[in-house]
Length: 170
Image (cartoon, rainbow, N blue to C red; front, side, top):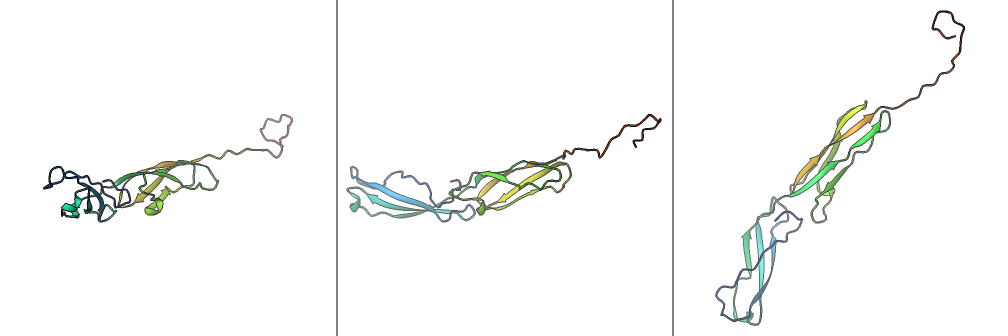
C-alpha cells in the first residue's frame, strides 16, 4: 500500500479448503502491518475468525503472517512568490503543502524555507526543502522580487533670472 500513517493493511478472503460442501461458513478478519512506517514495515499479520452456522465443526489457523511493504506517499511543497519594495521590511517566506497522510502536518517533517541573499533590486530564488522518510517530496521554488522604490523630487526654490549667458540659477 501507499503510506497512509496507519498500520491497517488490505487483505481479501479467497476460499475455504477442506470444508464439507454445503456447510455455512464465513470469515471476518483484520490485517495490520508490523509498522506504519515505510522503512520498517515488512510483514502483515492477518487475524481470522471463522463464522457461520457450521463454524464450530472446524479447527483452523487463526493467525497468518505475510510479507508486505508500504511505499512512500507523494507530497508537494510549493514556495509562494513574494514582492518587496526596495528598502521596505523583508516579507515572510511562506509555502503551500498538499498530500499529507492521516492527519499529519508539517510538524512531521524536517522543513526549511530560504531565499538567496541580497537586498538590492533584483530577483532572488526562494527554496523550500522538506524531509520525511515516508514521503516522496516534490519541492517547487518561487521568486522573491525586490522592485525599485519610487521617489519624488522637490525643489527648495526655483527662480527666474535675466539672461546672462549662463545656466546658473541664482
